[in-house]
Length: 347
Ligand SMILES: [Zn+2]
Image (cartoon, rainbow, N blue to C red; front, side, top):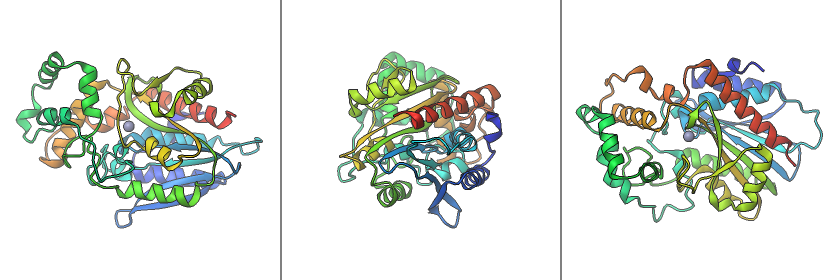
């Protein structure tokens, strides 16, 4: 497998590659229209085999992370061999946040973190007072506030623990539409489109397992798996045996992880209440938490307040979430394809 051949330089090129491979390999292809005029779509390739077992693989819920996510799905499609018997049905969801991929953001066109937008209700929004306290640091509105980043972080680390800070920041917030990790005040178009697609095409399956592919958490080039604690012990046991690796609980604060609400996997679980369902988050580590935060913070400032602000190359979100490094790119695709293959062939 030549992993590098499946990376594309833009959303449009990645989309074309995914669609061509799906069609040539005999998969059904669906396009959900996020924005017709802008030509932004969520593409879904569907392999129909088993009538009760379904595997879901999703990429790009965090836009810019779709560069490796799309490459994983394309590499998997290119080596697809339908002759194997007893296959599950498979849904490959390509780039849930196409706006974010095209414009190299982690959020959608409304600045929403889609992985906080799958709440079952928006009538009472989750609150996050610790985030609100950190907001002046997280969401600067003038370029002078961008300097002395390391010093500012160190001060916060002295005052609070790393895990507490990470929890407060990454948990998400539903208050500030221009802030980082904004979960939205209503369902985003991408969220609604996926919900309807599941209702129309994927509601009949009884046994459903999935992988939501991400980058940015963990050591550079290293793959790790996270399972939200509400899936329960049996899901952990199954996942550890399938992936042959320790599964990190998203509850444990000693690990590089955090709790949150409104994630895609939690949203799908709520959609499948009576089914045997779990979905794991696969993460490929990149540049480390401090640099990720610095990059997100600068990019958000530039996007909302000063479009001409010159960001340093190493702080561009593309570099922070999809490093231009051949060894990293290969490792990401290898780990992604391996996990998807293991899940496909698990009974
Ligand atoms: Zn992500």
